[in-house]
Image (cartoon, rainbow, N blue to C red; front, side, top):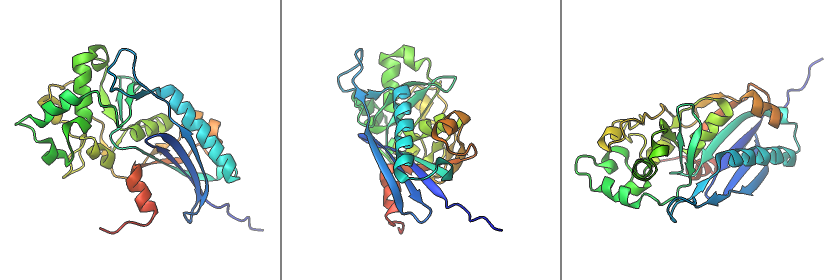
Amino acid sequence: MTTAKRPDRYMAIDFGTSHITVAVGADTGAPLSSIKAPIKYFTPADGPRTGLEFDPAETLNLVTATAQSAIGAADISPDEITGIGVTSQRQGLVLLNLEGLPIYAGRSRDMRATAEGVEIDANALVDIWELTGHGPGIRTGWARLKWFAANKPEIYERTRTMCSIADWLVLELTGELLMEETLAVEAGLAMVASGDPSNALAPAFNLADVQLPQTCAPGTVVGNIKKSFSSQLGVPANTPVVACGPDVQSGLIGFGAQLP
């Protein structure tokens, strides 16, 4: 007697501009559920009015709760999930300390580093547009890090690396840290020609204490989900977690816009 194989189901987690979206779909690409929850941003009490941050612990709980709701709405058993993809808004940034814990988490529209961005654009020795394919300087992770160095040295001095929001979420889910190269390039954290980390820019901006994580291509399995999240969601402990690139580009690929 043969037992019918259970169908594969996949989960997509998107940290978007205003909402966390978690979708569950079939292996054909057909959606089974999609649940949204608003992200809470705040302007730091001791920071500039143009700063916009989010609380990492609170947001991680929101991701978990939204994922649980999406599995329930899909009307499937959680152990049918065989893969999880993670994407996020471009140019969102998380600073991590030596232990890999977040000490700052900001959205793409955190505009605190206007002056630092102008300084980066005016640097005759470093053409960030040519090296990373993106600008202006205010949109880079380097500008925000320079702002912390000048205005919040207690945070800057504890910072050992930085990454996109999606990279941070994958780190929380798996314990493994890589920068997905497309998101990294968008934030000036990777070289557009090679996809490698743009570590050479750190000393150019007098930020030599920071070392960026290694990069990976979109579609890379970064690791398997940790037991703590596996238990909360009910998904198998060996479920792979995949780095997916920026949310808009990932959405376009989902629509079939794949040709040059």
